[in-house]
Image 1 (cartoon, rainbow, N blue to C red):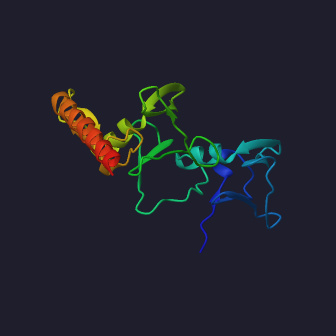
Image 2 (image 1 turned 135 degrees about the horizontal axis):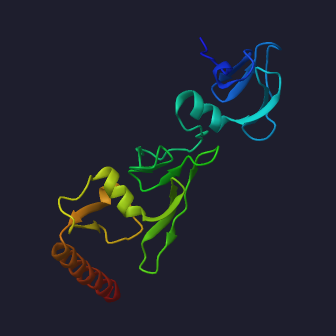
Length: 196
């Protein structure tokens, strides 16, 4: 059984109903065509034509963000909301960030900093923030560090592999030691390749 929500409480005529991501007109027994993507023109209770978006409808009816999510999930991929993002951004255990800012969900494409880390910009409450992917993944999947002096370490030393299972918190000293050991191991691996 379909559950439709009346748009009457939003000030529109009593024959309009929300059916997931479409508007049903019970008076004409049909679904309305969009004026533009996810925007509809409806009659108010007073008989005036007024435009409204699906985002406005969802927010006003449910206090929720409307966004069509057709993103294909990777095997074993799970998303968690980024703290403080008001359900606008989610981070996966595979290191992908999904945005629900528009009408259609999208995976955000990070840029690579001069130091080789992935970073992107997100907008929360109208303010822009530059965030490192590994920091977002660690906060969501590893929790907060035990103390503020801990750093995020990429276990395989690949700064763009931001999977949750490739990150760990270390003290600054432990972090330096791991990188020194990694440099020596990589040099040894390269030397062995040259011998063969």
